[in-house]
Length: 355
Ligand code: TRP
Image 1 (cartoon, protein in one colour):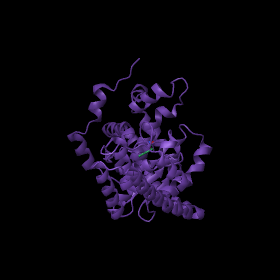
Image 2 (cartoon, helix red, strand yellow):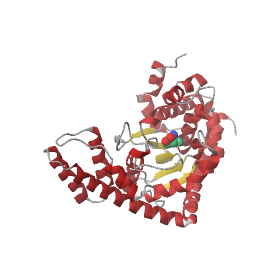
Image 3 (spheres, helix red, strand yellow):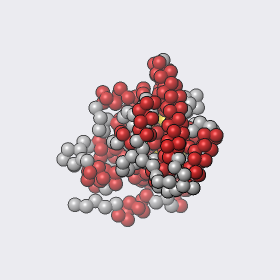
Image 4 (cartoon, helix red, strand yellow):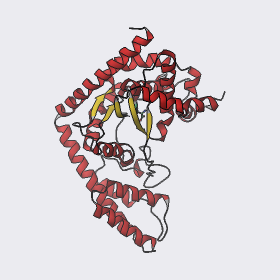
């Protein structure tokens, strides 16, 4: 049997004028919301694609809400393993520039009661067949899971994500391409709920993060955990990084290719100063004019990445050195998240006459 998204979903999904009207009649509570799965080692691609944009918006005066999606993470990990990553991922985000003075950071399971109740309520508004048509699940079931053995949390994954977003009444959610379908499910559920029970949920918007194509240093595809030799992890030691860059694929003199473009994005994205960025531009200019300067480029790239990593690793160690620092940041975040969640859920229960 094939499950195709078909026209119906496209219609439900598309941004139309009624949507704008709905949005303007209800108040957003959180300007920018993002959830992160605590599943270990981030790469520089994760930083450039997911964390740097949040930090940039924070610099512009937006107060982001960042939460650790531990309930999502137990879809394909043992809860005990997930628990061990929680403090680490919070330390990663803070060391990368998310400022607990400006941002709120909370743990999803600190509002587990609210999140799971809303998940149950929202689940009633979507059919099993529709959930099976969500492209991310379809891909998973085609490539690395089977309906007979995949656990059912995988099916509910997008509804749980919708509960996070709608409970917060979030306005903008920065997501990569892989999460776009989940955002569409969120918007669909919000609109169905509003139509059936009353206008509770402002419709969240996807914050389009300019998609950066960071490729593996060598080998096929994007930089990812599944090809560790081609990935720079934030936890890599400086020697390892130097070796990985040494083994990276580049381009012949005078030629630009995707790999080299990606290396340049890494260099310029991680550089701390304009003069370093100028240095990158200058050597690439020479490369384009046919000079054999890839060795020199790799030296510059190595220096930039090492500086970035050593500063990051030092900050991270400092943060983790005082365990109460993260606990109190999470407590502070949970207070705000809980207040918000309780308020939303009580309105939901009221219109459902389920209070
Ligand atoms: N599904 C997201 C991911 O895998 C994590 C996530 C869970 C999330 N809930 C969210 C992201 C709400 C944004 C908003 O990356």
